[in-house]
Length: 150
Image 1 (cartoon, rainbow, N blue to C red):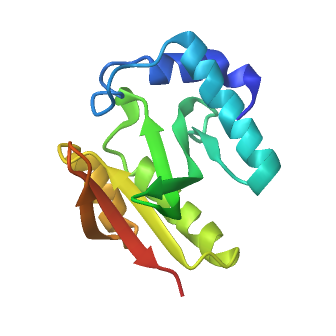
Image 2: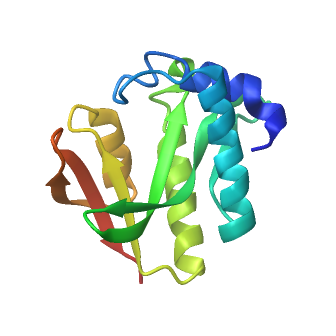
């Protein structure tokens, strides 16, 4: 992801369907902050969320790894967003499995996915990646799927 991806990321993160399980779609300024946050993650951690493209180079979404804190514990999370026209094709699952393998190769011992309780599609992605429901937290009862990495 680079600042050149801002238009595509703004469209993605501003889409009400993509952001249905967030408080609201993001503004362009918030999408720019998202891109800049990922650039900072790359510099600090060597990873973040990356752009997903199809075989023809068309923008599909983002997927990657970021540090998240849940109830005082910091873990590496798999995250993903896919444009509505490309959802349901296994692209998020493919990206999530690749991220899991990258985390394993980097010696990460535990991986999570934080999923809204109504987001069944993301729950399936987490399960296909080998994560299992571990806990619920917060007022909205977000679900934490987790796995120990060998």
